[in-house]
Amino acid sequence: MEMIERWLKGSRNFIIGKTLYLRYGQDGALKKALTGAETPALKVKLLQAMQALCAAGEKTPAPTTDKGEKMPDAPNDSILQSITEDWKAKYAKMKYLQYELDKYGSDNSDATRSTCHEICKQILALEKEINALWDKRDYYIENGTVPDVKTDDFTIPEDPFKHAKLIDNLTKYVRRYRLICSKEPGNSNAAALLKKYQDQLNICHGKKD
Picture: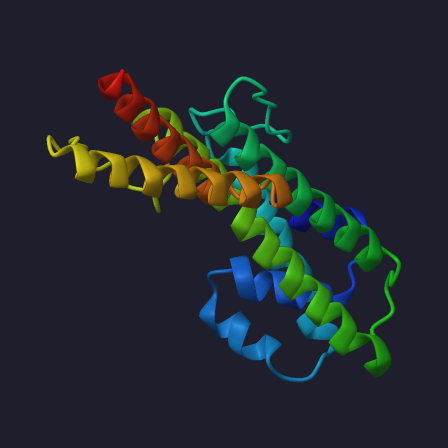
């Protein structure tokens, strides 16, 4: 509810408040009214609804997992760190957009409506992506991989030719995903695949040796 609190403490720009309520609000009648023209009565109803949303958020028990505002670094775990790097980039962009939004103050002119609406949409999309990164981090801690990279049963072929071919393929995969990770430090899927193939390659070399 951080954005709602910011709106209530700020200039209460109508178009911004309208966008936020359409995203978080539950009153269908008010949502329908907000798709129409701005009126003094509608502004009052919006303010009251936003205050109610904020109050409801304050009464909601805090989640058992303390996600806080900052995702911790994890220099000893490449996958966790890649998730953190992705979070840092998205969080910084969201904060920048919030700063840009604050510049419009209470200006509800036609010239700023579409701009504010678009910025709000970007912020809400980033907020959703950031929450998904926390979920991804929790999933990794619990399962040892990320949702899009499944752990497979890995067996080494007895045939020497197939064994050598497997090592060759895994070496190529490791090289490929190491390059991707160097270019995209926030790509946790690539980091997970790199670890997966590197572990398999190590097993192959261990058997070969």
